[in-house]
Image (cartoon, rainbow, N blue to C red; front, top):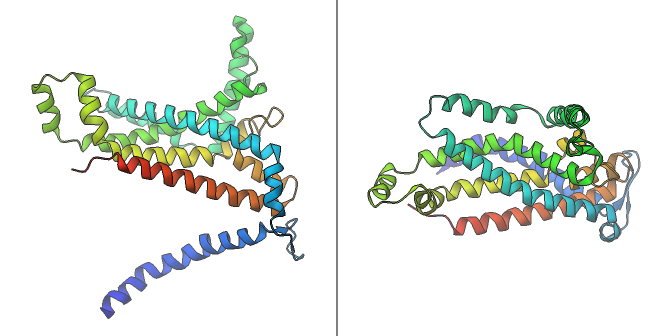
Length: 288
């Protein structure tokens, strides 16, 4: 028993200490600052103002608009990314000669950092699209980042382009774990491709759906760097997401207390939604 305790302390102790120092303690300090009026200066003691920052959030139109925009973006992104990621996994698990090549190509965007990705697509939308629009006369290609609607879809395209390949890997692992005997038995019974997908593949990859939806849900809500580099919230704050709104509250308006209050609300919001999503998805999983 003593040996087990020593082994536990040896291996888990440093991790627990690091977890407390990096996550728990800063979180608690952040919660405290959310009840203060603070401009970020370390030589000043923040004034305790109670719930004033949280009351101000309710009246903050910019925060409400950012929340609505982020929620719409998250719903669309979760559906599209998982649909494309799963489709890509089905494609590359076919016995094709270029399957390995396609896996590499589809996964590659995930290796590019968010800021770089945003600037690359900013060039595409503002340079390539604009040029195509001027040559062809098609207004569809013009002013993509100057409009809230096309700016929204620009962010969706970036997110889908970056994460679909990553989810493809998760779905590939799930598809390869499906017992071949089940699929062979279904074929003998005369099941077509859609029947096998609906009644065997979907239920068997349910745990992968749980993980993938959790990742896309959390990452979509937390999206910051692509939002900053592609639109910076423009035009007129119409594409500003929650993380960028919090960042600007802290570093543009130097209102760190209000930014902390928004961050606490943001944390509780994302944690609640992801926990509900995991609970609902877990209930639909099939145990072998």
